[in-house]
Image (tube, rainbow, N blue to C red; front, side):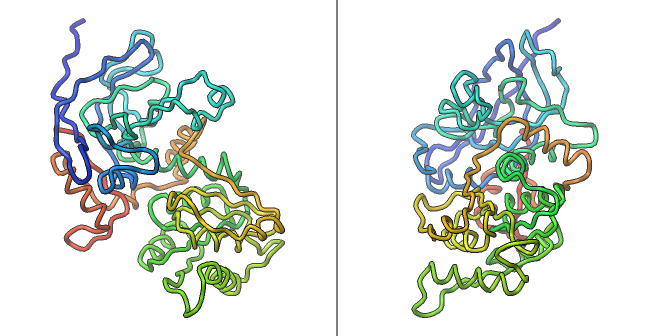
Length: 375
């Protein structure tokens, strides 16, 4: 059989803050258990925009050119000699993090904590915004016939949500949940909570338009948080006041059937974290998903007295991608309303600028932008 010939691997490469170029990149040949995917759809994540705008996220510093993008789906182009689960032409969603498989974290089944994780578009590793991407075959997930490649690209942020609610919070049927932040991840958390049978889903944000969308999408209740402190009011006093106002508005109690079982912060904002800890019921669960300031002040006495379970949720782990695919395939989560903008590959920089601005030139607010693969 004739050897497959690669076409141009034009890629969108970050060189520094606000400095991107299109470059040809070499295609890494697949190892025995790897596949080469022809990338067709890539969503823009906040972390991609953050690297473009700031050149770093925490300790992850862009010190050499790096291909952006990690929310992707595509078509299998080539398979390694020992790959049996996939074949050329299969449509797949890409899980963009390859763990080492041998460390303590990997062997304990929490590979997302692997210290040697190779994660797309996290320095120093290239991302998926090119024509081809090579990865292990077991993290290229076959898409059911009733899902398209745009659905596949959004399996990455959806898996963040399923990890937070299934693996970490262990949300149960009939639970009440409050979700802070109505951006893409917050909205997906709401959708997963609804799919899991949550009784009440309270969305909190400072943007009314986002809350209106959240209510139409998956939230049962919305709360527009005051954006300003009262005179002489400290941040922590503000947070306590807002939590009390929310309890009064929604008839929430500290214990029992009308209390908040699970709080998830998808904003990273200090005040949201504080409000959430005040809001959670005695014995409730608080999960941190959003990344913001590295250090925040929290009402630790409330955590102690209420015996809160305060947990972190990072990316996704075993089973989260298959669960996400099943939720969409079964019609329990609809991803299509989240895709507000689509761009050709050559307009990748426009796509990033639009996402960074929060709206396109026609005034349409961005929830999720998708970049098509190279023509």
